[in-house]
Every structure is written in C-alpha cells, then in structure tokens.
Image (cartoon, rainbow, N blue to C red; front, side, top):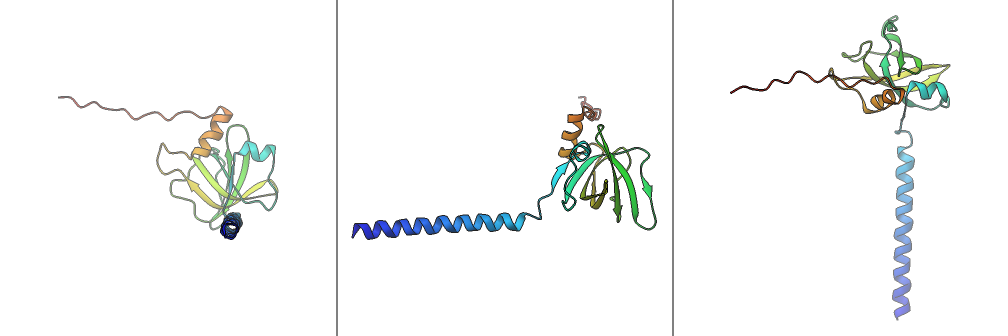
Length: 155
C-alpha cells in the first residue's frame, strides 16, 4: 500500500515539473519577438547586428544632422560621442524631439542606416533614458544635468 502512495506522489511531482517546463518554454517562445536589445551607436558600428534583427538604438541627435524630407520622412544621425549612425524615420516625430537631445529608436540596420519604426524622445529638460546615459558614460561624454537653483524659504 505504501509503495502505491509513493509511486502516485512521484507521478504527480513529475507531471507538475513537466507542466512547469512546458509553461516556461511557451512564455519564452511568445516573448521572443517582443524583446528588443538596446545598442549604443559605438556597439552598432563595432559589431553590426544581423540584417533581420530588430533592436533599439539610443544616443544624442547630432547637431546639424536633422533633415526633413517629403511628407513625414526624416533623417538624422545619432551619436554617443564615439560613433555616429545615420537614421531614417517615416512618421511623425515626438514634439520634444530636437538636435542635441537624447532619443531612442526601434528598428533595423539596413545597409549601414538604421531604419526606425518608432522614435522616442525625452519628456522634460533633464530626462534621458537610462540606456542612453549608460552608453554616454561608457564613452566619457555624459555630463550630469545642472540642478535648478534651489531657493530656501526665509522666515
């Protein structure tokens, strides 16, 4: 009688383990297209990604590189101080998008040009995405934003 209970317990544990492994595999399979790795321009130039890989690139929009084409076509360059990658985008840019500011784009590298499907820009004068800050610090270009003048209330 004891061996039957022991055998049933082992079967339940084995079935639960198999179900957990299957669920983990299905979740990973479902998320594979939703994961976009971040790369700085220096990383893209040093080790270009596969032609079919969708990834995120971020840095500063290079001064003087913003060119508006026909309709909603825009081209510019993104830099991290170590390398520059040309970017093209078809669509409406965020309102706060401008030269010299931080941005992150999602897309693919096609013939040395990053073709963006989405562009994100900073949301206030001091914000910069963490990935962009890390990439700029790695290149030695990042400067901490100046704190606004704090006023001490007088009594």
